[in-house]
Length: 248
Image (cartoon, helix red, strand yellow):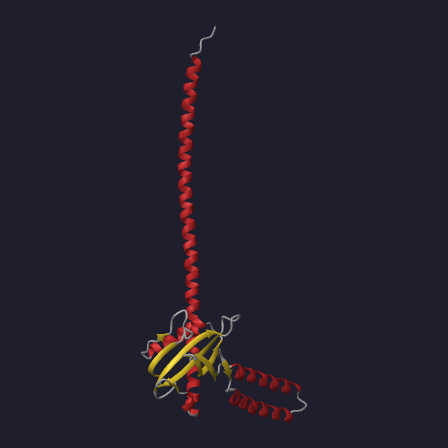
């Protein structure tokens, strides 16, 4: 269904190579300093992992409206629910509500369509934003991929964007990460509240059971006392009857 095509490695690798070059040259100036060499190579790896590991948008294709569409894409290390909540909240703040593709037989199910949206962080024009969030894989449900198709007058607008416009759109997706983190935190808070509410209900039920048992125990003790009194009364009656026996 999806053909991914990462186009962001160039700028990142270029920056990393420039930094690494500077540090390697520095190493050459201190060839006999093992401590300095260890520090510098640690910096190279640290910077490299930071740059490579950062969230970056890229381009690819996704099937929509019965054909493959050019799309902007980005991966997040958060659940689809967190990403979708962040996206909905972002668009809601801009004053837009989605039209959602639904229906069991609808292959476009799950896409959210924002017609004529004016999202200045992404583009200066009014465009149609068609968005979908999915788990990154069946095995990995805690990471997500967001697809963004942009159309103008019903036609995919990707080919018409210049380099600056393309970068701006990708930056918009990258800058969603704090919103996604906030949405994920809210989900964690909600889940924890539900765990606590469930535990509190269990405690209430146990206390109710205890009160019910205590009430039954009290009733049982009263019944025991009454039964004991009845036994004593019946024994007295038995004694009177036995005393009436005729003895020869």
